Length: 232
Image 1 (tube, rainbow, N blue to C red):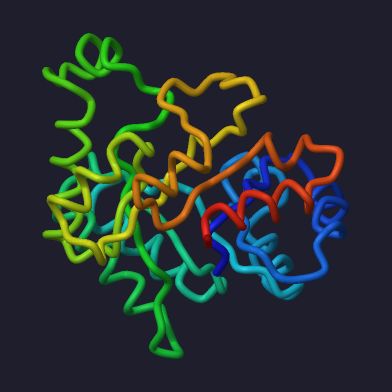
Image 2 (image 1 turned 90 degrees about the horizontal axis):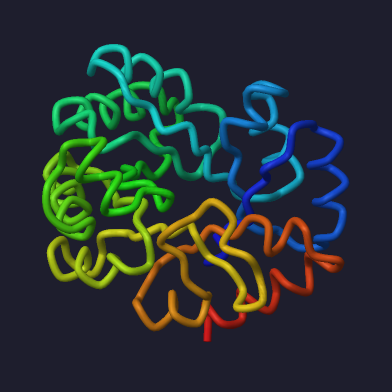
């Protein structure tokens, strides 16, 4: 898997295929709600058939038994990473992993990670709307510890929390970080953002990059530039 994950935030299969034509070697991509709801889960199989690795970003969050059943059905799509919301609790996260293991007919399940706090969430929103006091980093680390206790492989967090998560959960506990922008790009609707260079400094394992790559005139050149930073 590449350290850089290109977010396929498109609404149609044709847009995806057109975008991927720019890449003559396999990369890792993220398939999220927008594309899945437009084209269905067969998009995972189609992108995998082209040789690319897939992070299926559907953020399951429900009662444990429902999430277990959902993950059992997702297990054999071929995705390399799947995720849940850590806010669902330890029992739900354990059930999600169990579902993946039950559904993985070849015995190899996808990596499973938990979303901590969305990178669009500010301290004020967390305090006032979620009713969680304190700093965002405290909530994120608490969720990360719960994910580790549940046996998950890592978490989705912002770059700004990656070091603290590694300190709390160990160097092998994966950090997948969205909200990455080139210095010249707008932050759009993200709040806790950073550049690839800063992500590398913070020890992030994987970074998710959307508009900086997908809206570029030469997506491959930008992807390669970012990947070079992450693998240096």
